[in-house]
Image: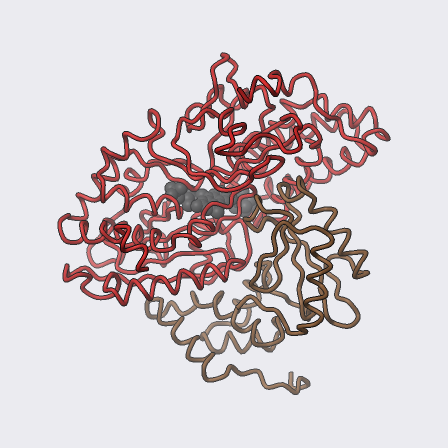
Length: 436
Length: 174
Ligand SMILES: Cc1cc2nc3c(=O)[nH]c(=O)nc-3n(C[C@H](O)[C@H](O)[C@H](O)COP(=O)(O)O)c2cc1C
Ligand code: SF4
């Protein structure tokens, strides 16, 4: 706490509560261009402006710290290293929204992080940054940490709300949106940890300053959690707009592919986003350098692009098996489906079975189109986006790595002994050139 | 229900904790305390939730037992059967597999002679495979109680097992 204060911590709380109105805080967040860091990238200021404000009804801010998207491990790090930055963000954001009680919903596995947050909250309370009449401003705020119970689906905002109410994590049908009817039927905003932590910087330095960082409509910095077959897995804060190639090969970030191997594929924004082969993650179809930004990663749509998503950057080298990885992810979605919608509940199960048989050498050629068909039937036909999230990895793997699936079917024995390896399509750049 | 000789009741400190938690929500919304209270109950009563324990929690929160059962069975962290003193939760999701999680899992299976979901005959270890623990850059990962063990190799896992055998103390989340 002392260290955080010395570094100028909680200055944003003083500034917001003593010199600004809630609407002025909202205005700064709008100007900053900040977009939700939980995966969807929805503009935060706009989301806040939708919050209904009926007389006499409490409003809630809930921080989404459920972090369960495979490949994503940034929020945990932020909360452990700098819990006060999240708490400070919670205070200024709650103030802007007019919430007097706010919750941080943390995935239950992270009890040790919950303890860190609880300690930081009591420190903040001792210094008068939480509780009644904060800093004499007349604004009251209580902040609590809520543990989850182990369920990926509770990261989806309406499932999270159900879970916070003490129920199973079944997503709700929208509308009504949480902004109108969220926790206990009251207007609610759900934001990711990283999004909320960014708001205190924005309040302190101004939305215009924040908007100067980054590129185009991808303003600011983003935490990227990098994992897989790289030399330096970890969490990196990047300015949006950094070239993907630099991110993968520079020593400042991932430090290149581990063991001097070659890059095969990348899942750039958490397991749900389309997987891209090396050539398409480094350059767009038009031959332009791919950048770490919402727009550049999405360039080419789902035909040749992907999404920035949650910033979970999974790197696969020449030895990785795309079929096995796709099967693994599909099993994950099947396991995590809440089971409310039949396309999701049944479709993820079928895809898992079919992928399992291809991976283990019992597949048929027609299975590949069957997978494409099932994925297409799930997409867009479910209550929540988990269905889409399960369909995209399968559709994209077959779109870009069809030969590898066919090889598994054609070579049932060989595919049990070794992996397909790096096909011609995967890595157009000699490793040396990429490092330069 | 009375076969169990142990009385299902929280200590005074634990009860105080429960009431503090209930106070975090508006009046009449005490059901919101269900997940946090189930975690406490599991930690207090041998790291699993028996029907008696769930009924006790329902009673404490003034809700129907079915409301507790349906929640306890939805979330993976709640054990509905007795478990070993150490529940070894090995991540089996993609990113961990890229860096050797499958090897770690099969090593533990051989070493302990059990499959996921099973408990060693001496009641020491339960092996459980889990989905992504949000530590993908530091895989393979295994959670035991509240602790994450990262960048595991079969050798490091062996050392851990030895350490647990020596400590011989039930590991819980909270
Ligand atoms: C299946 C599923 C899982 C999700 N998991 C998370 C998560 O773990 N953390 C998160 O912040 N958002 C997650 N989201 C996105 C949330 O629904 C929501 O969009 C987000 O918390 C909004 O915050 P933001 O606008 O600050 O990004 C998930 C969405 C879906 C459909
Ligand atoms: S899409 Fe899947 S996870 Fe989402 S509500 Fe439907 S069944 Fe549940």
